[in-house]
Length: 323
Image (cartoon, rainbow, N blue to C red; front, side, top):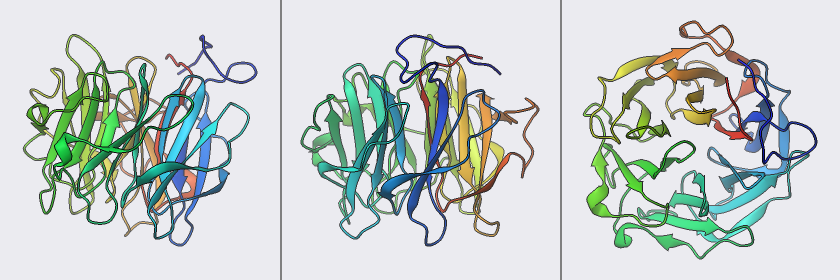
């Protein structure tokens, strides 16, 4: 697996990397980060100074900067953000008016940087705010203020024409739903699609790439911590039979598109283990592979030694990457 420089990169030299960010384990709410430039070895973990979260963070690259967003570790459930310019992270700043009881999702497209989240406390509406390079727009409730989810949304737009959200239903509904938007701003109830019949979970994850019709990879953990995945090649119209991935996680999987066809996954294992962080190459869809050897991944492989988290990490490509 290799990488070469493209245009619109940040910093000195070739700032091409896959980034990972995560919160610590148990009482450690600090946010940590690392990067890999060739897809095999990760740099030593470092802190995002001043950042602490009760949940997983979100990552997205947009207009030459890497953006990090997270829910505050305090009781106010406020959302915060910071940027990375190839040399270091900015200080944390609040997203004005935004709060959530769960982790946010970040999506970058030509229109701007979009942040999506469930409301604070018992508010089950999905909210959106957009950053235009100068300031965040006032948060707005999507889907005509209807209650949509009791957990956090997942999003993908890295290699898809539309912006896609995946989320479970409101109240006790744990069915996974998906919805596309042409621009990340316009969302319609009539476009909400029910996911695979077996997809019942509070923590869906989503990756995608464009083609004749958009290809989506959906993953979700069941109540025993087994992670299942399914793919479709027709914009969520027809899904492959769900396949159990060689993964155990009660909180889901973090996805990142890397290059034109690749998607990488990272997760923290179920609590009967020790919350170690693992990662895999999911370019094969439901056949997850060892990112170093290319062989089919087996349970327990590709642990990142010394890294632990209570939540799945976030990942994003910073720059452009190719195999």
